[in-house]
Image (cartoon, rainbow, N blue to C red; front, side):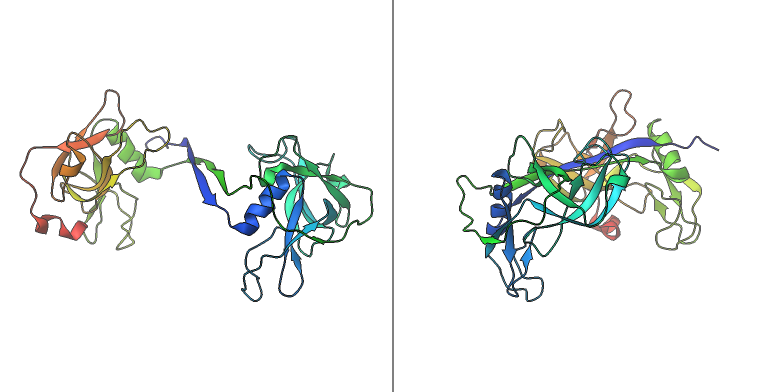
Length: 314
């Protein structure tokens, strides 16, 4: 039995979005220590605000200021905070209905332990020392002894230098275990070989193997070495440089049908100007020193493959 492989992996990208007038006012208000909601056509005040009435679907723009104090409606204790969460010490996730609002806002509550948290407790916003126009301008909530204060007040939403867009980093940390079939595939790649597995029913060879035929649904185990040469079936030209990827744009990413395989895999094409890459181009892998997988594929110099030879793999 080969050794089971596993590796820590991270998927991370910055999510950028523009803001409409309501969300812009809400986040700019947080920067100015002002909490804004929006009044629906039925008279309810929603915090956080939305741009369309959840009942009538009508556009709503009537901004209303609510208090920075409120009441916990429900909660859950977080004994082990993770990277990027609001607090580094154990805290409670709480839904807080701010005074003057009809809906609850999700955030963190700083508390010494779960015994100090209860539904119905009074809390107030602890503002971040530095505010930029984001939900993190609310550092957290903290216990508050006062009664319900303040009444919702209409607000014109006018600010100097309003926030018009935000960038939210999205990140997923996980451990990947490829399983038997892909472990064998990765082991072969480290020896500069490419192997797939053949379905015992339809006889198709899949690369990378998944341990089962996606068409027939039966287990696969027969290993078949394919390639290393193949044919470009389809491709795209990449014009936007990826963060932390040392490849100059534009470059080509393609689906490549390796000789002997019945499923195209994707890889970068190099060794040829991007505007000369074409369907049917014959390519071969280029391995870097100590590389565990092909760095890219380059033209072999062979005549282009006939369309009928790869049309079923498009």
